[in-house]
Length: 292
Image (cartoon, rainbow, N blue to C red; front, side, top):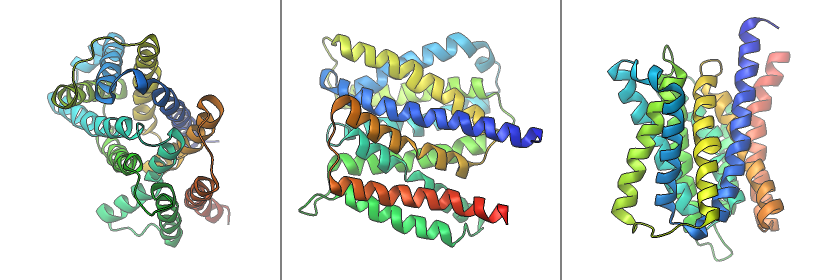
């Protein structure tokens, strides 16, 4: 295995770890939101993440050029919109549903690349889009064909994740990944602070479970994943990242059922299977072509 391929494998494994952490974090947040409002939870987790990253890599972050700092904060704002809408969405939907819906970025990323580069991604991607959209409708619509507001917010979070992946791919080249992660975290902190102050009352007290969730989500669920994904995208493609991050849906669904007793109905199972099939097609078809 040559050095370039080895670097890509390491990068892919790092993104896969991010997917697992995202799935687990959805479960942790879902169980803790009863003790804190979602915007204040996001603000506190981003304060923890920013403090942790600045403590470790602050010197490298402040040494970066001004333009790189602004790009990092812009990327962080997009990232925070995904987290903010996802946190509110978890008040109305399950961690498993949200994880599967967010996994649909796997088909939107190559479509966006097609739009900007004018390079057709292939008919297998089109098939994946149809399967994932069918699965999304199955997850979002209840028996009366009404859209669950939590699933709708999760779909918006998915679009923000798509934009975040593309922005990181654009801005990470030639930059210090750890320093860039610091400014991303700072952007998320500022955006979430504005939303929390504008839309929610300041919490008087927080439960022990909420503080533990904030500490975990800020360090492992945010600071670590920001560094891992930003660094990994130096060595792998945005489509690879989207495909691997889509597995957070599987992790989130399974962990939600195991640890917090979330339901797994036939409707959710079939809809999730459609999305998973679309993800597999996007990944498997190019791999099979390379073997020929």
